Structures are given as structure tokens and as C-alpha cells.
Amino acid sequence: PSGVAVDFGGTKISATRLVNGAPQDSLKVATDGTASAAEQVAAICDLLDQLALQPQEVVGVALAGRVDREGCWHALNTETLSDVQAVPLRAMLSERLARPVAVQNDAVAAAIGEYHFGAGQGCRDFAFLTVSTGVGGGLVLDGRPVISARGLAGHVGFTTSTLGDRRCGTGRMNTVESRASGRAIAHYAAEMGQDGLTAKDVFEAHLAGKDWASELIATSAQAVAELIGNLTSLLDLDRVAIGGSIGMAEGYLDQVRAHLAAEPAIFRPDVVPVALRAEAAHVGVLTLR
Ligand code: ADP
Ligand code: BMX
Image (cartoon, rainbow, N blue to C red; front, side, top):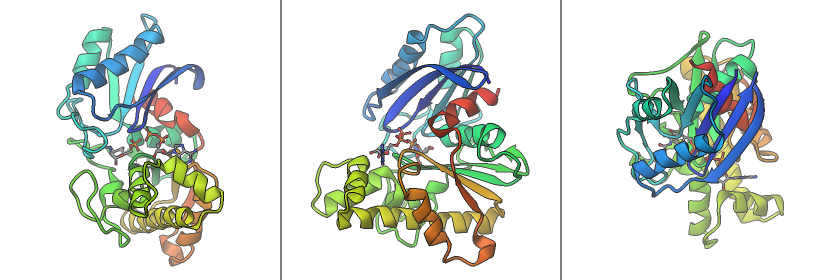
């Protein structure tokens, strides 16, 4: 696909111009989770302005949070985005940019991108999981993306985990996200007395051989493996691709596979790395339209 795509995550917002799937210009800024809805929309427009849209250029925006059938954007985890509720993003962007704009959840978009151009090619029942600020998911079943009217379908990070012991920022108890996400890793690190660290810092400490950090990363990977077993039981997946900065970090996928190996064979799909890396959601949101 070609066009300009935005990927609005809980930690960073990226914008890329793709020409026949190849990234050309690229920009990235940090997300301000406490900014007002108007400021979040302004941040998206600012990146698009910097990329100087051509008159006929296609635009797509993938975002953390659910996107409903009307193109309205709502955060589920309000610790990640505190002021994003019922933001009529598709209408606002279409008017401002004077063209139709595709708007979709980031993990759903990435699932579509991977299914057509990446690690999901050639399979029928596919899931993409992102282990990043949150734990997101997108499903392609029998070759069709699963997209619901309220935009909640695919939010597999909000199913529960046997490893859970607290609430996540949606208010739901014991979710996979509450245990496995970047926010969760930072939370449990602070609880262990390692204050002010990001999940990236914890991951680096793990790679440097710190046991407390390795324990947190292993628990995250175990929760993700349990999630994959649960999803396979429910949906009979052929393959699961894992992305996000934690999901793509060194050795993480192997840890997920190692935990999954404890499951009976029928609950073990192929688990593979995201092929389009950080471009998966960009590619997917431009494939949607
Ligand atoms: P977003 O959630 O904005 O889509 P990412 O996929 O980069 O963005 O995920 C952000 C989370 O990943 C944060 O918790 C951050 O601390 C963590 N992170 C970023 N880079 C790395 C890395 N190289 N290794 C491990 N964790 C990382
Ligand atoms: C959360 C949720 C999902 C999102 C996922 C990954 C919010 C703000 N986000 O589960 O909609 O797809 O995180 O998002 O409710 P990321 O921020 O980790 O990229």
C-alpha cells in the first residue's frame, strides 16, 4: 500500500509515508497520555502536516484504544490515555484533510497488515499480539478481520490471567495487560523497590543478568503464552505473530514459546515474530481502505 499512516501508541506516535509498502519519510514523537483529546488530535495533525500530504495521498490512522463503527475513538485503559472518550476522529480528520481517512485500532490494523503482507500470509485463522505499553490484539478469522460495532473485538489483553493480582487501567481485575504489559512491568518493578524505571529499563536489566528483572520479563512471557493457549482454544488459530517493543525484544518470543511448550499440542499454534516490525500498523491501516 501507499499513503501516509499514523500509529498512535501509549508511548510513542509515529507517522510514515509508504510507497508501495516501502517506508520513505518517517517521524516519531512521545505520547503525552494526560493531554486533552483536542491536544491528541492536534499531535496527529501536526505529524501529518510535517509530512506535507499530497492532494491525492491516502491517509490512515491506527490508535491505541477502541475505534467504533462511527469512527469515534475511546481509550479503554484510562491510565494510558486519560482524556480520550468519544472523540469523533474519523469525521474530524476527514474534514480537516478534505479526504476520507481510515481510522482503526493499532493492533487490529497490524493484524491486517501482517495477514496480507507479513507473518500472517498463507494462514486462515491468525492473531497479532502486541506487547507494548498495553497488550493489544487483532484477529483475522477465516481470512476476514474481526471488527465489531463498538470496536472492542480483538482486545485480548483484557481477558484474565491466572497470574493476575490487580486491576489494569480499564478497571478490570487480573487482566493479561495488568501482568504482561510495559505498564505492568514498570508497576511490578516499582513494587520491588526499583522506582521510576520503564519496561525498557527493566528489559535492559534482565539482559544484564539482574534476577529481579528476569523474573518480571519471564512472568510477562508466561502470561502471554497462557493467552495464546486460551485464544487457540477459543478460535483454533493457525498462527500468532507477536510485536510491540517488548514482544520484539531479544529473547522474549523464545520465552513465550518455552512456556507454550508446556501446553498440550492442540493448544499450540505457530508463534512467530511480527514481520513488518514497527510498520505493521502503518501497512495495515492503509490496506483497510
Ligand atoms: P507503543 O506502546 O507506543 O505502541 P512500543 O511498542 O514501543 O510503543 O511499546 C512501549 C513499551 O515498550 C514501553 O513500556 C517501553 O518501556 C518498552 N520498550 C521500548 N523499547 C524497548 C526495548 N528495546 N526493549 C524492551 N522494552 C522496550
Ligand atoms: C491497550 C488498549 C488497546 C491497544 C493496546 C496496545 C487503550 C489506550 N489501549 O490494551 O486499545 O490496542 O493497549 O496499545 O485502551 P499500545 O499503546 O501498547 O500500542
